[in-house]
Structure formats: C-alpha cells, structure tokens
Image (cartoon, rainbow, N blue to C red; front, top):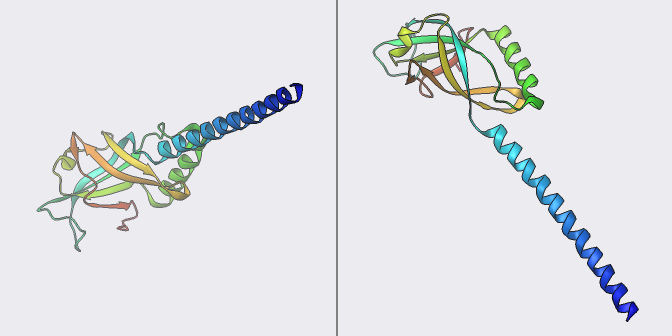
Length: 159
C-alpha cells in the first residue's frame, strides 16, 4: 500500500512538472510571437516637410499624372517601436538621413502642392531588416499619396 502511494506521488510530481514546463514554454512562445507581430505591424508617426515643389520629370518615374510634385520630409520620431530596439532604428535613420538627405516622394496628388516647409504630415512605416524603415503610406492634408509614386532619398536617386 505504501509502495503504491509512493508511486502515485512520484507520477503526480512528474506530471505536475511536465505540465508546469509546458505552461512555461507556451507562455514564452506566446510572448515571442506577440513581440514578432508587434515588430511587423505598421506604425504611424508624424513627419516634418522639408520641401515641396512641382517636379519636372525628365524620365518616366512611374507616376501617371499631368502634374507631378516632390515632397521631402523627415520622420519626427519612432516612438511606436519598442524601446529595446528603438535606438538601433533611430541610429540607422540618422545615418541614412546624413548620407542621403530627407526622404522624398514624387506624386501626382495635388494636396502635396499645398505643403510647405515645416508642415506636419503623417507617415506609415514598417520595420525591415538591418534596422531599415520602409515608408508604406504618406498622408498630406488628409490625402494619401502612397504607396503609388516613387520614393527616393534626398540625393535624387530614384529607388
């Protein structure tokens, strides 16, 4: 009888330990998935217009419109990125901006023509590998001017 009780207690301990380990592993996995989803979700920030002007296209820049406008801007902050990785993205964006200048977008959307240096616009972005930021949408005075159009760095290189 005592031997059977000991066996039952031992089996119970083993099952309890396995259950606790399973719960711990599930929570760790669930937490990791939540962080991955958070990092891959679209984020929004304000941006400051550096310049906005009509754009004369010498070549086909991929935008079909009678008039084209170029709007250049800098992202105001990356506050929606979790703190543990934010500084890496901020450093990469500062390095990109120092090397290439502000981000620019060529568009046929007329609201871009009303933008002036210092105006605030909204940008939606995704986090990419190597701490890069991919601008997926730009809103100027309520009008969405992305993703169609061509985005390029301030150096004038179309990408």
